[in-house]
Length: 163
Image 1 (tube, rainbow, N blue to C red):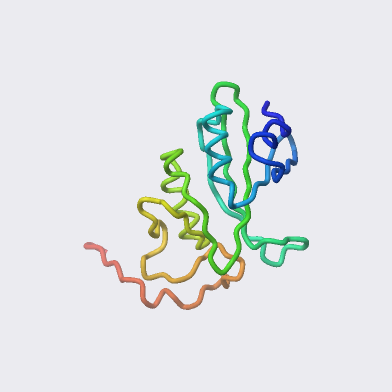
Image 2 (cartoon, helix red, strand yellow):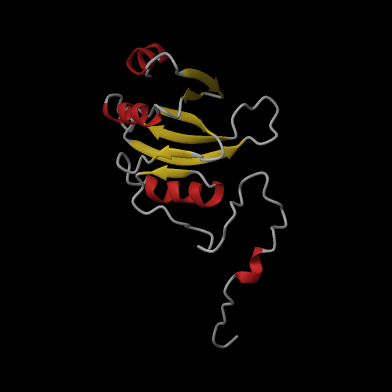
């Protein structure tokens, strides 16, 4: 297991750690997240990006940031898992893309962009994945109304033969 003191000596003291139900999480600054993820892959053997997602903390008691982007990593040799979390805020939630480290981040970053509006600089094809290109909102943000904003009126009508 990679010790927190080793990570702090390598990447700086700005890393904090927490453990919940045997899941280890480190919190890092958004300015150093790419350097830390790159080092975790190259030096500590976290060769697999299992998942990449986001959390909207709007109206969450005690939250100081609007969004967290969460990277779930796996060291395939030792089986160690590590969660790396970083914060981003409005008006321009943006992080560097990890596509150059893990090609599997391609669609994961696109999904986070599509659902939360968090962009990833350096991504080769950052466009909507689940919603139509004309859609100008982000459905997984907590300030998005449950019944929508009437956007469906401009969705193209699909007609199928025989129906």
